Length: 348
Image 1: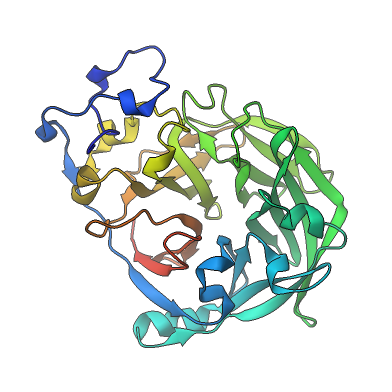
Image 2: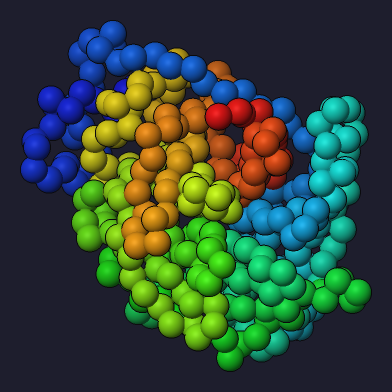
């Protein structure tokens, strides 16, 4: 059923939301929705293990001029306690954008899990996000156990000469969530000078009524809860903060998760409008800007970047994002529909 999600706010109760998204009323008059610009993208060819859908890329991050790719299950590409990430230089990326015939071949980076391999590579768990602070790296682990799903943030050290990252298990902090959603954890990391900012995957009004993000002190590991403004659908990765505290997140909906996410009205569509292909499809694939003022995370007044959907396409499970200087963004998909690295031109 088309347009299940983008109903007029008048079709909803003002208090609370419909638990079953299938009950959300459709828009009787599509002309009530303002049609706005959507953004296309250029795919960048990849080769090697990272290019296969089974690599399940779950995050991107810059370390100087190297772009790092995180796989959910690094142990699939190594033995014992070792694992693998990948990296490619910014210079190579620019060349591939200028010449679409170029295929990038990211290099392997060894990951020494230092005793945490069983946690990272167990079913329902895995690496979800990464940020670098100099030679220090922070990784988010989704951890599923008999009590549900929780998040673990762990510090590591990058050794450029050996081309390896070594995790520091003693630095690991566990984040228990106020809500328990299967396979939802701390999907997104960004940072300030003194703190890592960790964001839960589901922050909608009904699915997480008292939504909170977490600040993890880089010095002590102390965890502080901070408010995050409600945003429907999933949040799967973020850029670094700019000088004003603004950053972009991936905001994604696979239609099969409508009920799981207990969808409420999409206030951003009501405020800014909807792209033509989004108006014709159920999935949502967009970037949304937040601001961190030192105390809370809130949406900015910048309209979302709605990605142009391919005709009759399956959902692109976007899981990684970084800025590419002032040119736009690099995004990458997870397992569905396969690993796809793209450049999204954008100028604010």
